[in-house]
Length: 243
Image (cartoon, rainbow, N blue to C red; front, top):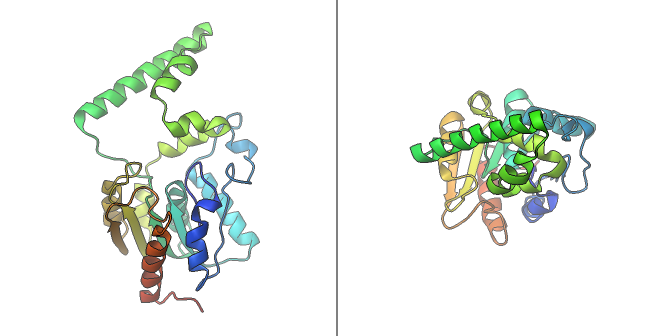
């Protein structure tokens, strides 16, 4: 079970405890989160990691635990990594559960697209000026004004965040051969439901369930029972009930 950006394994613990009634559950603190330190290569000084490098680190963990076949449950950022793993190691992933996952480009309204392009142009100019004359325009003005909450809080993982959020995993999603269950909240503003429908169209063997009135973490509070029910039902139907 792979948690979202800025979270830790504790975010998925209630759902994991419910699934542990039928399955062996492995909760993971991804590198740089929870109790897992930031690998030097993933830090700003190391140039940052992309989702492929994170996925390879998860693969190393699975190898260390002698797990050669698993069901991946990925939320948000953890969903990006799950898509990478399922595409790169189809023999490893028996089934894929994506919960409010990003990783795909979105079709924005024209005015929003223009706004983003203008901001990116101004940011590039500010960085160029900073490099030429030693000013701090980007750090002192653009980052505080236009940076997301995740960006502002990313600290030494800022370059990793920029790399991962700018990836488009459309080709990887299309390459997935394992059965997939997509769980989304209808009120998810971080990863809106248009991403759910897009994943559903890209992953050949996928099922989509959208929960009314749920947000980006539909597994929170009593939602953990709701998600566990749908996950268990899906896995049992696919013949993947616990042995």
